[in-house]
Length: 195
Image (cartoon, rainbow, N blue to C red; front, side, top):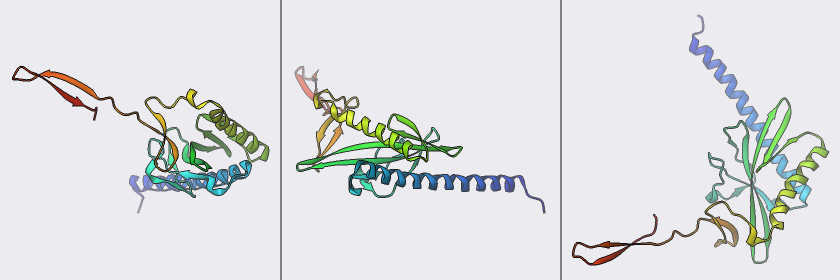
């Protein structure tokens, strides 16, 4: 009995899916290796750098916490993404640095996106050192800028959260008072808080 067109498409889809799953597994292993090498490069502890979960729009899911295994997410650009959080802990709190990392392997060559920084990541140790130097310099630059000159994403302000972590939150909505004339001829005020 000859194969139907559907059977042929099914076989191609199966091969494609198998290749894609293998690629995702390679990216997961790469992410774990990248984290370990960066911990070693910084001289940090394993609890100082952990993975965080990204949603489908590649934003950090704040309520998911952190993990020791990457949760990868496919981007629209062909990169596979995962999130890293670096914890800078001190006596009275903690500052978190959240990094979105994208990886792509084409023709045996890895490309890595570290927030807005994009570089080749070869198998040589010198390549890794150069990459980590640039990634670390971008973080150091952020913390070298005085706090009052920092620019947060539009509409967000930095605050210390209940668990002593520096986070960005939307500013409180302004209270708007609307004066309207009531049916009895008197002015009444109503409040609108923007929700």
